[in-house]
Every structure is written in C-alpha cells, then in structure tokens.
Amino acid sequence: MATRQDVEKGNDTITKPLIGQKKEVQIQSNNCGLWVVLLSTLVAVCGSFEFGSCVGYSAPAQYGIMDELGISYSEYSFFGSILTIGAMIGAITSGQIADFIGRKGAMGMSSMICIAGWFTVYLSFGSFSLYSGRFLLGYGIGVLSYVVPVFIAEITPKNLRGALATANQLFIVTGLFIAYVIGAIATWRILALTGIVPCMVLLVGLFFIPESPRWLAKVGNEKEFKLSLQKLRGADVDISEEVAEIQEYIVTHELLPKVTIMDLLGKQNIRSVVVGVGLMVFQQFGGINGIVFYAGQIFVSAGVPPNVGGILYACLQVIVTAFGGSLIDRLGRRPLLIVSAYGMLLGCLLTGTSFLLKAHQLAPNLVPILAVTGILVYIGFYSVGLGAIPWVIMSEIFPLHIKGTAGSLVTLVNWCGSWAVSYTFNFLMNWSSHGTFFGYAFVCAATVVFIVMLVPETKGRTLEEIQASMN
Image (cartoon, rainbow, N blue to C red; front, side):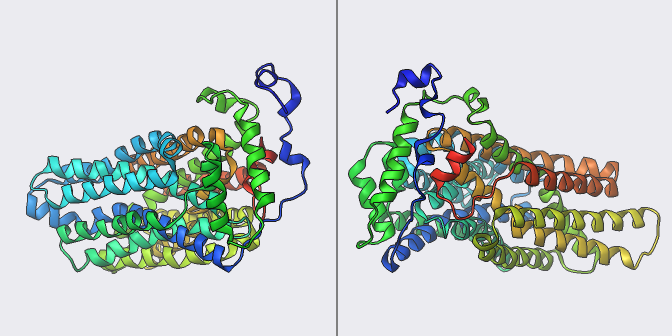
C-alpha cells in the first residue's frame, strides 16, 4: 500500500487509482433497497422544492408587499437580490458543512435556517426584517443547492443515478410552479407560510432515511457505513464488492494531503474543476436569469396576463425536466447537454430576431409570435439538459477528499453567475435588446464546443470509476 511519504514525494504509487486495476463492480439491489433509495431521494428533494419556493416567492408577492408595507421599487429589488447574496455565502460554506456534520446534518441545518427565514418574512412590518428573512432563505438554499445533489449521487446505484439526481432540478421547478400558483390566489404572508411546509417534511423525513454511506466511510464510521449501504441495497443483497471498492477508494485518497483551493488547480484535479465550473458558467451566462426576468414582459406584449404567463413557463419547465430525467440514464449526459445547448441557441436567435424586427419596425404582427416562441423554446431546451445535468455531473466527478472544497467552488460560481446575469440584464437591454440575445446565442454556441471537447460521459459508471478516469 502507498504510504503518505510516497504521495508527498510524488511517487507513482497512487497516480493510477487502485480501483482502475479491478474488474467492474456489479452493484446489486432488491426491491426493498430500491424503496429505501426512492424514499431517501424523495426526502432530500424536499430541499430542492424549498429552493424553488424561495426563488419563486418574490414575483407573486411583489405588489402585495409593496402595497402593505409601502416599500419602493428599489427597496423591493434589493429584497429580491439579497437572496442571491445569502446563497453565495451559503455556497462558500456548503462543502465544509456537509463534510463536517454529514449530508443529513447539512440538510437539517439548512431547513431550520429556512424556517427561521420564512417566519421572519411572515412577521415583517418593515424592510429590515424582510431583508433579514430573505437573506436567511438565501443562505439555506445556498447550502441545499450543493448538498442535495451530492447526497442523491452518493446513495443511488449507477443505473439510476442520473434519473434520480435529475429529480433535484425537477423539484426546484415544481417548487417554483407551486409558488406561482399559490401566489396568484393567496396573500404574501400566507405564501411565506407555505414555504415552511417542505422544510418540515424534510426535517421529519431525515429521521427515516440512512446517511450517505460514502460520507460515513470517509469519516471512519465503518459499522454505520455498512449498515447504511445494506439498507440502500436491500437486506439480502451481497454488498461486499461495493464495500471493498468504496473502502479502497477512501484509503487511497486518505493518503493525500489536505486539500486547499490552490490544490484544485493541480494536474490531478484540474479537469474535474474545469468541467464542473465550466458547466455552471455556461449554464448561467447563456442568459437563463435574463430570459426568465423578461418572460413576464414578453407574455404581456403578446396579450397574456403576467401571472398566467409565469405559471405557463413554470409548468413547461416541470414537464420538460421530467422528460429529460426519463432519458438521462438511457441516452447519457452529453447528448442531452448538446441538444439542450443547441435548442437554447435557437431560442435566443428567435427572440433576438424579434427585437431586431421591432427596432426596425418590420413585421409588427410577427414580433410577439417570435418572442413568445423564442422564450418557450429556450426554457424548454434549458430544462431538458443544462438546467439539471450540470448539478448531476458536479455531484459525480469530484473525489471525496476534494468534494467539499470543489463543490463549494462550483456552487459559488453558479450563484455568482446568477447574480451577474440578473444584474447586467437591464443594462444590456438598454444598450441593445437584440444584441443582448444574440450575445447569449454566442455563449450557447460556445457551450456546445465546451461539452464536445471536455465534458465526459458518466452514464452507467460508479462514482469511483468516474473519478478515477478523470483524475
């Protein structure tokens, strides 16, 4: 076995991971184990539903809050954006929290923070308490956005991992959809109380599901590690091969020095980091937040009430995300990502063309049709691939010894990109509306090149096999 001295001196003892020398591990599970995996996933994605509820709250609550509390547009804009600031801070700490108190512990802590945030918003009678509650919500979902996909990836068999990990994005858009529907008929205070429900379900559900076996192995809790894995695979299933693979992988990486941010740039880790960070950059800078921000106005220009328009595109996201989830373990990650990027490119070109025609006062009857079609095409293709799959791949490609640090970095990049696109969108639209969407189209084209050249196919492989091949 390699010693720590071998690693620190740069010897070749572990440059080829031990698992690469073994035959492919056949992961088995029976119906009992499958039900435990499905229950665990269902509990975890309550955190994703909470994420969607928080993001979707500000649009339907806007006029109720402004009228009742007498706050200005600028104050409400800050109320909306402070969620992202909290999420950035949550993202920075998410990996360390999940590594220190476990995946279940991180989800439970985040749920309690979100509950505190919703109660603060519900009881607000001024802008300060509104901001405080919204910030707490942002911090909570910043942690959840990392730990939920990681937990799902670590508990699921390889043949189901893609579909179940996609449930993370599916429940995010479902939470968004439900927030829009309830917000159309309920007051902003009642809507805030509904945000507590998924947190309570998550907190209760955590008592009935096992902890991530890979995290338990990482912290040296061997007895609980085997018990957890046995529950997830079924009482009568032989888990000895999977146990051996995980333990061997853990032992190999325990020999490595403690990871810092600079270590992520080393030759053994750089490809994983580039893929993880790159997918999040292209996901956000393809303009998703700008598109969604402007969708309401697009629908109004086509004669559709903004509340109805919001419900329509949120419903579209739910349907298409579910469709993409059903395909991911059959077609693979790369094909869906490439199709998604091409579709987003088409959506941007259609929307940009509508603005170009409008600027030159050409084909006025065609302008709203092109705009609505472009928005729906963009959102539909985003949901089938680039909405969910970057989170799936992020949860798969990082070895356990760098997962906390690297996952925090990737999640932070995602939230920073979200803020940057939201912040710059109005400035870009004032500069050139059609130029803005053609610029997003260029990013979508670059996304295709990035995926083809760098993103690996992870379908049908264990986490250890994926990480060994990349590092």
